[in-house]
Length: 125
Image (cartoon, helix red, strand yellow):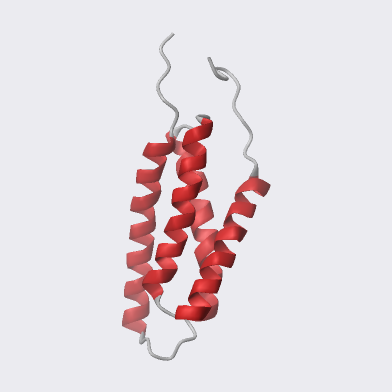
């Protein structure tokens, strides 16, 4: 029956560890390739693994899963974006703004889709 009247506390240490693993992966890929779309792809791969884990545990509603997914994706891509993508001299301001807007919209879409997948099934009483 699950915890019908009990709200679970967030385990921010767990989500931060997921984000640090994602940050290490994306920073490694960003340092070796220096292409923004591979950085986004590696961050989304961490999101897919997190979604699979959340779907297997069946303890997340949509809002909680969305919050966790967005936190992990932003934590995993931020170091690679700040240390590799922004300092590269081949991007002008318009390209940088376009990449930030496109990545934010892509991550919001991916987080909402992954949250729909990861949410627990409806329970009938």
